[in-house]
Length: 377
Image (tube, rainbow, N blue to C red; front, side, top):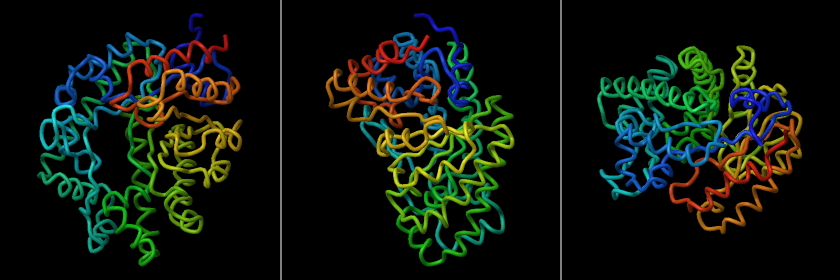
């Protein structure tokens, strides 16, 4: 059957919990695209045009991929090593030519640096973090950010030219709890949470305001009113309910509500296991946000609790792409797609990134499942 909605119409209807002609197909594809065309990852991550040509080839093979959850503009070598979200090790530099990039946890900011955040704000604090994490000058960080914005626009232009929708226009980073944890490093930030909790609470609100303001600016820059907001370290997998209610939920709830007031749709890209936290999301505005899961959270439990409340994106796991038989992936895809009725807001996707070492036949099974099980018209 042919599509009767555009990719953007399908995306908007799915978020609004309205019926669609077929399920949105929105995997996160980056390094796999290079492997798909037989390109060493070193080449993929250091040559933008070759990387984008590889993305195009994936889409040509599987045009049912209708929404691009794009990330490469922040992961490509010249950007990642100047202003990427953490300390990168890259293929062809620290790693072998066909290795996957790595992001290393690094204590760039100490507890003694916190007054800087209060005094100078999140933007300046994060700039200092990037200088230290990447061991580069302020000028190089700024050049990296300018290049990232240019490449982001190129990704948008290429995606729209293919007829895809943009899953998000900008990657706004993370919820405040994660943002501080990343700059401090995980174990040290958890100690801060226990030892100087009152100070941390105050700082989280400063970060929250900055992320909201940054989201507004990004929507103006990209023309897409959806933003990626990541979350991992504040999940029930890592912290208890008492600390979640103190250090994660207040800012998250305010952030989502304020973005919604500005007609911005937060796509909560929440890796790790949030199963214990799912009922909290019922307090967020209905049909105004997306909860994206990476297969650690029980997506069927998420559907049971949140159906009719928000769109859910996910969640074919890395193991199904890499070690399972294609028939096993197909079986899971069938169960996932059929669990959601038309109008219940499923965005069919990989659980976080589609693995670089995915079997090609399993990737084909992933895309084939859209036509087999995801057509409603």
